[in-house]
Length: 400
Ligand code: GLV
Ligand code: MN
Ligand code: MN
Image 1 (cartoon, protein in one colour):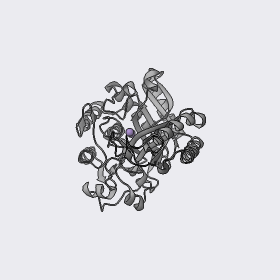
Image 2 (cartoon, rainbow, N blue to C red; image 1 turned 180 degrees about the vertical axis):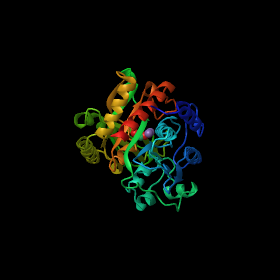
Image 3 (tube, helix red, strand yellow; image 1 turned 45 degrees about the vertical axis):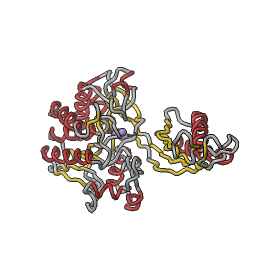
Image 4 (cartoon, rainbow, N blue to C red; image 1 turned 60 degrees about the vertical axis):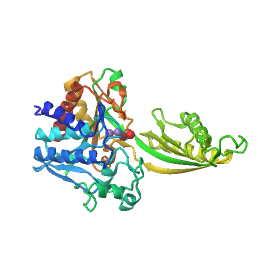
């Protein structure tokens, strides 16, 4: 029998949506004033649900269940991409709050910087499993404005706080509810996705060194145009990757910066932020080998010099069979014919937590598949069904 208060769950989501509101979405980059306001708002919510709430030295907000176990860990993240959607991350955190409010033995966690505003990304979920070193914190910078992570932590009032670690043996498993961020469910007229595995994201920074010069005085034969070398290399990657990548591999150039970036000046340098994703380690390794080969080739062929730096290389994860079974049985009971098993094309904190305990994820549809954009949305009916399925599955898994 479900004790979920669906109205309170939706009310929480819409209240959090107001913090850092941007059009119909939110702007809550990690450790910004809006992000910190949302973390403190969450601490109040957790306390109101009877959990022992705290925030740690990397910004993880944790609500600890005070009663006896076995316990579940549930959550996601509450910062957003810049000017992006209101549900990416917030949904999983407030779903966890809804379970706690219904009396389930759940610890709630909002992991910091899943969205990778700082180099490395997944700061909170990597920190809690002991895979974020002090040295990495020293080196990491904000990808938008270059602020050192140490400075951002100080401004946010988090420096000097200890970083929490998972308590060995405390949790039976980790559930993360999330929006799909794609169109598979919507196109299939389905309402629930039981996630089978989560892609790893490998991020790269490419620097092209050319020669800044006059756009008219310098002949085409003389110039070293970093911008042209960059786009030729990216076109070569796009031509070569389909031959070696996996069936569902994706690759994205999210940013190209030309310096100095003026119409009358040949760009002296170009910086490219590039990433690829897959659930298969061999596919990821093939893409890395091909990327390196294409950079070597560019350095032979071009007048500019290209260098390649790995920014982060996450590890793909498979979801736990018993937890997937609980989610499937719950979906079958509540929406038979309306659900499917599916891989996750997005990265999630669950992929890190999965290395330390059984973990699984539940997807609800994204309208039009849109995410990492302020127009991201999901119907209240789908959000409400999702929390019922999660509650049902959590009870089943606790009982086995
Ligand atoms: C996480 O936000 C991702 O980009 O997959
Ligand atoms: Mn997310
Ligand atoms: Mn995201």
